[in-house]
Image (tube, rainbow, N blue to C red; front, side, top):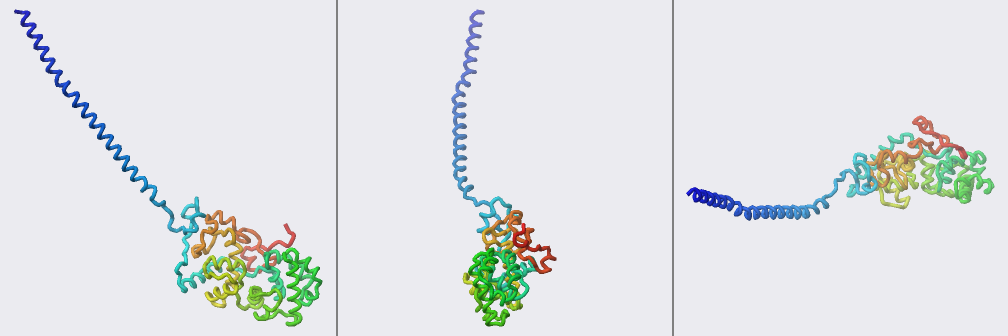
Length: 351
């Protein structure tokens, strides 16, 4: 009896154990199925993210880089590596009306007058004869070189009569440093003869008479009229031509047409000083090859801003003459120039 009861108990325990394990065995496939489903969902989600990232990537590449609104198109290349704060907002003259052009041109002249209040002709002279000769000699060379050369010339030939009677070879030797000395010798001796024979040894004070002298054109005539006789005139030299085109005051290339176009923008009384302001600015800051845009007082009014160095510190190193701490072009400059801190040029052979 005991045996039977014990075996009954054992059989019951076996059944119970079987019934307890059975559910676990049945749940295992379901758990596997659930894990697989989760993996599939995760994979699907990951691939969806990748797909959306791929779609979003081109948008990021296409997004335009932030660029300062103040930098003009031409300045972009020159401003590489320079903080936007160092740039200046120009005012391009596209579609500029005639009235706006006149206002901008006159404002530029006013700004330059404040920067160069002592602007003057940079050729040394004591009388109209010395000025006309010095101006003829200044072609294809600097005023500084002329100023270093003329003291010896005028010491030997102080009057038109003296120079008219000079031996050409001796004059050539004196003028050699100015370049093209043979042609220049012919011109200064020729104009001295014309002054002696036609004008009683005096330089005429009329444009139509001056341009008849050998080697004297409208540019030279206006230099003489404006600075020796106080008669307004526009001096269209290489600096003047370059700057007025950069400022888009005119698109003309012929000096006579430039003179007429620019003259129409200003009162006649401003012409001589305007010439000095523009020429001084061209020699000191707005150079032909590398203008110092970052040091330019009229940069906000200049359509060509950015053609040169825009970084203020680098631009300062490009300045010439008194703005860069160097002597000016005259050996004997006016007192106003010296009072403003200008220095006389060194004589020929010095330094």
